[in-house]
Length: 205
Length: 315
Image 1: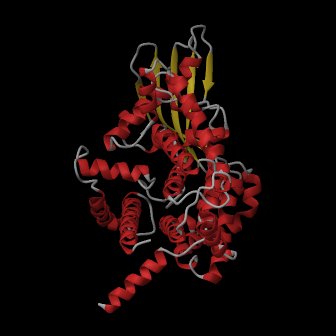
Image 2 (image 1 turned 120 degrees about the vertical axis):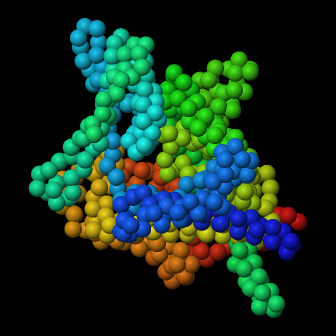
Image 3 (image 1 turned 90 degrees about the horizontal axis):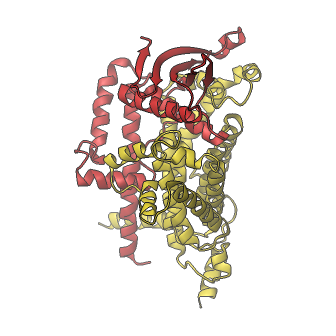
C-alpha cells in the first residue's frame, strides 16, 4: 500500500476517533449536568456549559436544516456512533409500568399491558416505557401513550373507554428486601381515551 | 524534522500492522450469527413493531419523521415502503421482504458467500430497522451497527469464507486487514473507557446498590431476588470490579500479559449480563466484537500462512 493511501486512511481514522470522542464526551458531560453523581451539585452549571462546548464540533448548535449538521448527523447514525456509552450509568433508574384499564358497554372492566410476542421484544418495550417516563415533553408522552392505547384498542374494538395508567416501579434496596420490603408502584400519570375523543389527563404531583 | 518523521513511521506501523485475517473470520461469522438471531428473535413482532400509523404497537412514521429532522441521509424502512407502494405492494409485504433479506444477509455472512454484498445488505437493512424502530431500539442495535459498519468496509473475503474457497476471491493486503482491526480495537477502547467513567460517576456502583437494582429491575429480573439477596455482600465487589474492568480496558488490553486477563474478564462480564439479565443477543454481540478485536492476538497469528495463501492463490 502506498504512503499516500496510508495517510488517507489515517485521516479517516483520526476523524472517526474524533467524532467518537466528541459524542462520548458530550454525553458524559450531559450525565454530569443532569444526573445524580459523585461530583458536587454546584458544579452542574459548569458541566452544562461543557456539554454545550462539546456539542459544537458535532454541529449540534447549528440550525437543524444546516447541511453540515445534516451530513454529520447522517454519518454518525450510519456508523452507529451517534450516542455515548453510559449504560446503566451513573445510576440504575427505576423502571416504568403502563397498565390499560378497558371499560366495556356491559360494565365489564379488564386490564391489559402492552403486549408483544417474545422476550426480545419485551426488552424493547421496556426501553420505550423508559423514554416515556423520562421525557419532559408532555406532548410526546401523551402521543406515545395514545399510540400504545390504540394498539390495545384494535384488539378490543368493543371497549368504550380506555384508561392508561402510567407509573414508576420503586425498587427496594437489598437490605430493605431482606427485611421484607418488596417493589411498589408510584402513580405518575393517567390518561382517559374514549371513542372519537381527545385524551384527558390526570397526573400526580 | 527527523523526530517528526520517526513519529509518523511509528504511527503508520501501529495503524497498519501486517495481520492475519483470522479476526475478520470471527467478526464475519459472529455478526452473521448475530444478525440471524436478531431477525429470528423479532420474527413474530417484526411487523407489529415496525408498522406505520394505525397498524402496529407505535407508529413507525412518527419515529422516522423525528429522525428526518435530524438528517435526511439516514435510511429507514419507510424508503422501501414508499418504493413498494409504487409497485402496488402493501406495507406488510414490504416489511416481510425486508425481514427475509436481512435473514438472508445474515446467512450469507455466516458462511461467507458474497461476503461484501451480504455485509452491506446486513448493515443497511439492520440500520433501516433500527432507525425506523428508534423508539423500541436499545444498546444492541448500536453495537450491531458499529460492527456491521466496520465489517462492510474491511477487506473481505477472509480465508475461511466460501468466497475464498469456492469462488477463489482474494483480499491481498495484510496491512489493510490490520488497519481495520486497529479501528475496531480503538473504538472498543473508547466504548469501555466512557462506559466505565460514567459508572464511576455514580455512587451506586461503588456500594453495590446499582448491581442489585440492575438485577431486580423489570424486565431484567430473571433471577429470583430471594436468591440474589443472599449474595448481597458480593455486590460492592462486583460493582467495583465492573468499573475497573471497563475504565481500565484501554490501558491494559494492549499489554501482552494483561490482555488475556482483561479479555477474559470483559467476556465473563458479558456472559454474566446475558445469563442474569436476559440480554442474550447484546452479550453475544459484545463478546464477538471483543474476540474479533483482541482475541486472535492471544493465540499465534497465522500471518505467514495467510500471506502465502494469498500470494500462492493470486499467482
